[in-house]
Image 1 (cartoon, rainbow, N blue to C red):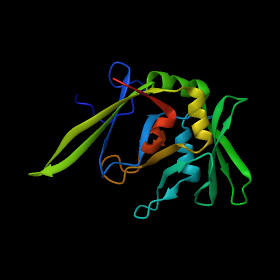
Image 2: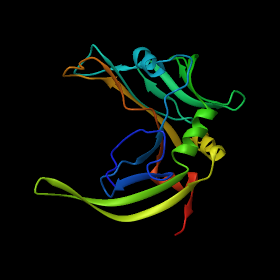
Image 3: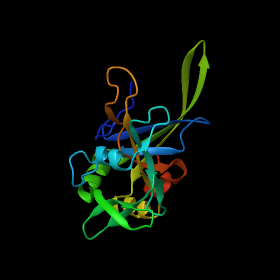
Image 4: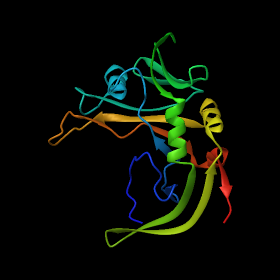
Length: 209
């Protein structure tokens, strides 16, 4: 189909989002969608990078903010601890930052339920999950697509419930270019909402065909 890796807010093909994974070498997590934080600031991820990022080992003058966050455990970065919390009164998913004594110091980064619901409806309401085998031959890579399964999303309530249980996590991938014309410029590979492959059936119901 010519599908490339992307972070578009709409589904890949006629309302169906396509996810592929290779046997043996595939990543354990599936990125359901990416959503920039609503937050209190326009460049919220850049603020997180500056305030809470860690230094590159080979590029110590710049920060990176590569972190996977959960609602059930604290994630340590530098001398700070981070956790996801759902506030049903304010209808927000909030990134909370704590100091080393676990005092809350920052909750400016969040996603409104409306933002999430739009992503669920426009991006991943229907899912095609493709399993493939991969091999290298004559310096080229080949894929054999061996299986496809179709799923329908259970809904926003179940999505939020799985975040609270730590099944769905939020992953930041923000850093800087370390060479070339963009040296030192910030890049953002997207803030991904991720789920383990083994937990896919908790969020989706299988569609038989």
